[in-house]
Amino acid sequence: TFEFNEAVKKGLTKEGVYLLTVIDGLSDGRLWKAAYRTLKKSFAHVEFVSSSELAWDRPNQRHVFVLYASDRPLDENSILEQAARRLPG
Image 1 (cartoon, rainbow, N blue to C red):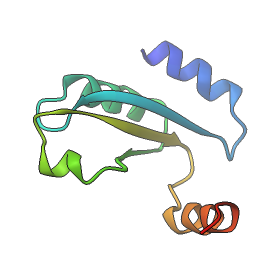
Image 2 (image 1 turned 90 degrees about the vertical axis):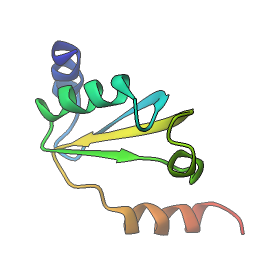
Image 3 (image 1 turned 120 degrees about the horizontal axis):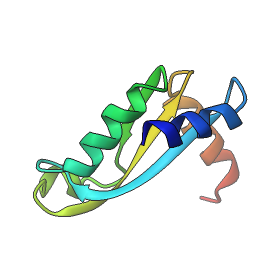
Image 4 (image 1 turned 60 degrees about the vertical axis):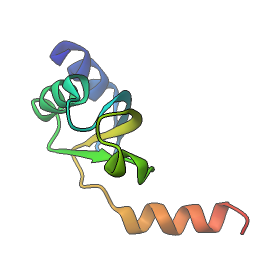
């Protein structure tokens, strides 16, 4: 809800990030779409993230998605660089 998102935002620092995990279908996903719209009311930057190519190949099946919400933009390059440093191989 908007109220919950506002409470989360209040607890974050200026650089803070809120990640919301959603299990839903890509094409008919009412849950992720509603969550996205609600997050946009509280955060300047909201991004839809999927780690699975299956979501795009099978849009009518349920998949795990992450919604990124923050007042700073998502920096994908930084995330990939940090993961490469921290994960073996």
